[in-house]
Length: 92
Image (cartoon, rainbow, N blue to C red; front, side):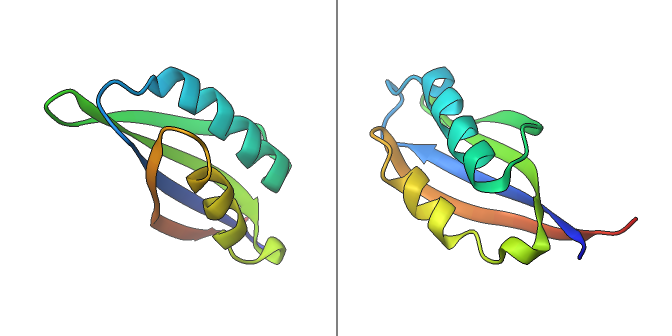
């Protein structure tokens, strides 16, 4: 099976939400779900102090959908929304 490279965009509930703390919690959830501990994280300035987390990670294609992971992240206190913004199949 191939691997897929997935980017999730996580929006916090407010500009006051600690994105570093969210990042730490979310990385643990992704690592538990994928078995992978390598991530690329980009903090995107949205507006009026609001910052989104864009987290890119690799997952084995055989694991299927990210729906369960998205639900788990959505349930974290301080998270407003989770969206898959990019999925690419990695060959090689």
